[in-house]
Amino acid sequence: MNKSQYEIEPEDYWQEWRDEGNDGYDIMELAELLGWHAISSWGAHGWDLGSWPYVIVFARKLDLLVWVEGDLTRYHFPDIATRNAAIDDIAFFYWKHANEDWVAGIHEAEYAPQYLRGPYTGKRGDEHDVRGERMYVCLKTHFLHECALVFEGKGALRYVQVGRNVYRGTLRTNRTDLLGLQTSKGVKPSHYVDVPDLDAYGPGC
Image 1 (cartoon, rainbow, N blue to C red):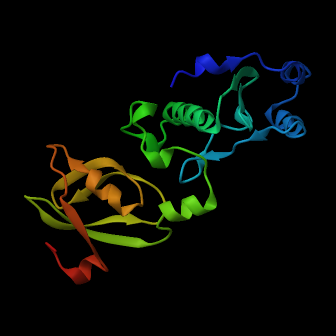
Image 2: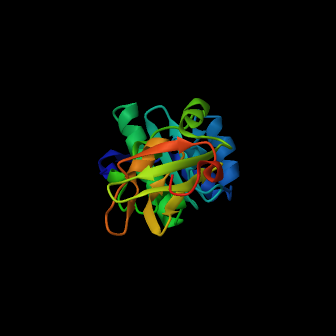
Image 3: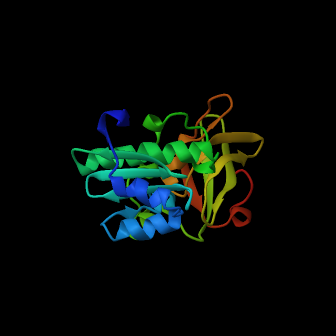
């Protein structure tokens, strides 16, 4: 996304607060008095946005300000959708910079899946996660019919070993993402079947 077309000059008070020696947390309190909200999390899973108090993303309706250790970048957008798309881009940049697991294998923000985009809400997080659930599945391809423990609890996996085959990809708790995995030779599961217990189900599915 080309955010530069929406850049404007920051209000004088941002620079005044900075020059007075306020740190990021002080700035957050002062900005709140003027209707600015520091966004703490982003995406379906509520991943950290920025790195407080050094990197903070402030929003106020169609306005956005990114504070990076006192450096200020100010934006004004025509609508909320465009503003949120810009936050998607900012979030992805800092996640990649920090080598976060959930963006591994995704090279550009424009290719980020939907669950990495948009504001976080508790409802959205609940829909996306299988919290604390142990999930066994049987992955099936034209060549394989094998079982694996794919996910347990909360988080993300970048690869799953099924027998002698290693499937790679970015896997979240959403079961539909299983079909996005593939082996180094490009083999993908055609479908999968949930099983209640790997040992009880038996080897080879």
